[in-house]
Image (cartoon, rainbow, N blue to C red; front, top):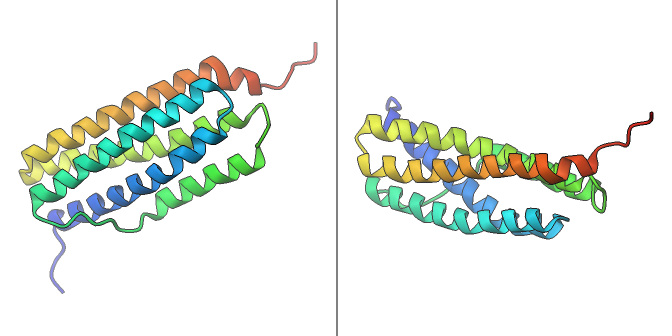
Amino acid sequence: MAEKTLDDLFLNTLKDIYFAEKQILKTLPKMARAAQSPEGKAAFLKHKDETEGQIERLQQVFEIIGKPARGKTCEAIQGIISEGEEIIEEFKDSVALDAGLISSAQAVEHYEIARYGTLKSWAAQLGYTDAVALFDANLQEELATDQKLTELGEMSANPKGAKKKVA
């Protein structure tokens, strides 16, 4: 068996995030429908559009390295999405639903941030300079989305879900 290289790991991780982004793309409309606040709905729909662009950038990376754009099942993202679906089911029609959706979305963002940061670094090490910029564009969008979700949670969702304190 041939020794595995950083190139192999890079391709494996690229396939992983490609699969993950496609799963996220399917999930964001469900989250938008479940969200109770107009701001939450809008944030999920905006990120759906961004995710489409991120998938296009990943397809460009596959072209750069001369490989077909193909995903590989990502157990991590499937688990995170499954947890989000449980929150939608368990907290449907509750004041805490939006806070739960934001929490789930941030788990997704943090996973993506980790992947894009790693892939950007590896692309630089492997000499895929055009890919570095594509990964950085995706990374910056994910960081901005994470920040927006934090603000959304602090401004609206979390206070509404807070338990009333007894004096």
